[in-house]
Amino acid sequence: MSPLVRCLASSTGNLTLFPGSAVDCFLLRYFPDHHVEPGALTLEEVNYIAQILSTIALVISVIYLGRQTHLAGEHQISQMHQARSYQFQEYTLKLTDAEFGPIARAAFRADDSLDDEQVMRFYFYASTMLRFFEEIYRQWQEGVIASGRWQTTKRSLNGILLAPGFRAVYSVLRCTLDRGFVATVDSLIETSRGRLEIDPVAEWRAAVAEEMAATFGRQNQP
Image 1 (spheres, rainbow, N blue to C red):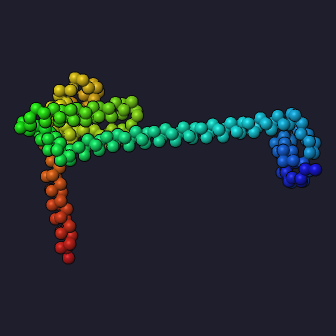
Image 2: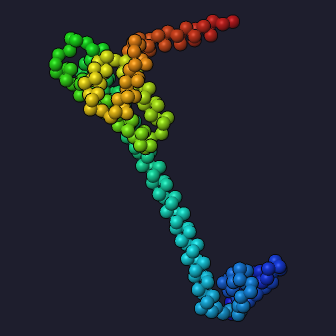
Image 3: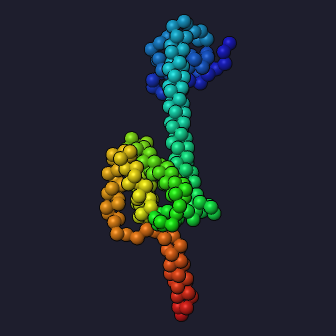
């Protein structure tokens, strides 16, 4: 005989002891008008249970697959952002290279003492960087990256455009670039016209002097 199972035998909420299986209890709870013989299941009852269980399993599977798809999408976007950040870091660190760094810095300033080979090296370096910014612009336009990321990138581009040597490369490639990107770059150049290019060494030394003065000033306060 099946073990005694505590279950709800009616809609009144009264607890009774009914000799039968857990399935019998389930049917009594959710199908109160359905007659259940103690310890016995009909084919109709088995069909009810099978349908309910299969529906529950289907819902769980859909939720799980949706969650996995969402996590996979987030992981892919995270990898894309990381790859883009790494690529920009490579461009920046290239300027610290002992051999290429001095050439690039001189070219940014449009130093006419550079020979043709040095100009050629800088041209392809700057054009690759320019294409990198163009691609980020296109991804922003397509909704792949958020506006906040593009705004940060645009500020970096604006700083580089202060260098006359980089603007010269842009001028050469301008007709081959995305029209929307060209309009953005033209606007940045126009709004920053007359500003001096960034001098990291001079700005760093000035910032250090300010920090040292502020530090000693606080120490000398009574």
